[in-house]
Length: 353
Image (cartoon, rainbow, N blue to C red; front, side):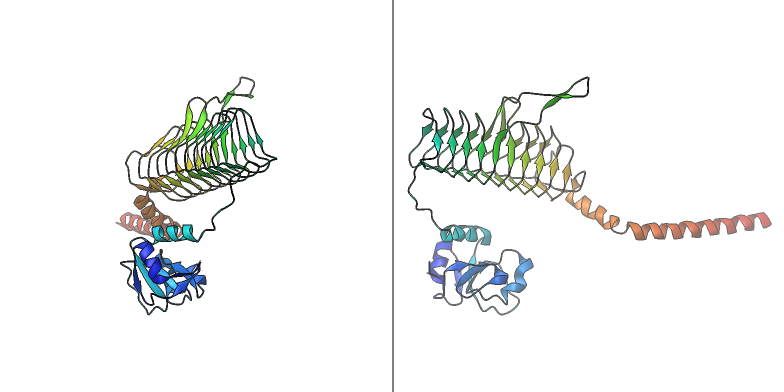
């Protein structure tokens, strides 16, 4: 697809600086830009690449002020990340294959399949399951009994949705996601063994949820584990039974959320964050990667870091001291020896008197 800078500016409601007739056909990273490609500068950490990139067009924010001359044509937009998301969607190859149910897929006769649904090879749709209109089920997907799947849902290869679970409209589940595996519930016995506690609840994903590859969301012991509308989950995340994730929260890879923890809406959670069970996290909370959250966070809109988690600013101050502990210990020992010598000198002086 060949497109001119002036056409892109019209699409993105942006302003062209440079040649409005220059054409591009593909996107590229700014440090690997080639002629005929479009790239973007969203993080100023990469600004140095802007002055050397060979990309033909670069998207920048309207308030960006360059420090050097730029060879590429610029398109200034209100928000670079929103603009690039729209463009990548346009550049993405469309799937024009007609919807069909593969001959070697198994769809139970009691299942309800909507209009325009594709079901790939060796996929299984169990009894009483429902699939909404224009959803795409890739090969080797398993959909359990009484599962409800909304419209315009995409389930990539290897997804497993266990019995009774509910998937809303416009959801995307990437390869090998497991929805509705048993919660980790065991009762300790007097002889030291553990007896499994039946997990009879389900998982509910509301609309516009995206779940990354190999993420597991456990069914509730009773009731539902709930992922609210607009949540975006990265790969390799574990969400335990009866947990709840609030609307439009984003969570990065390898985060673990223990049972019955409630995370608020519009939170931003970094990778490898660990949450203990039965706590509540306020709306708008931001948590740095590798943080351990051991108690509830009640004040909304705050940033946290460390294990156990403390407020971001307090952590940074503490870390400034921590980095100097070796030097501070050395200085303290020197001061201790100096005070000891002065004390002995003072005692000797007093004895002479």
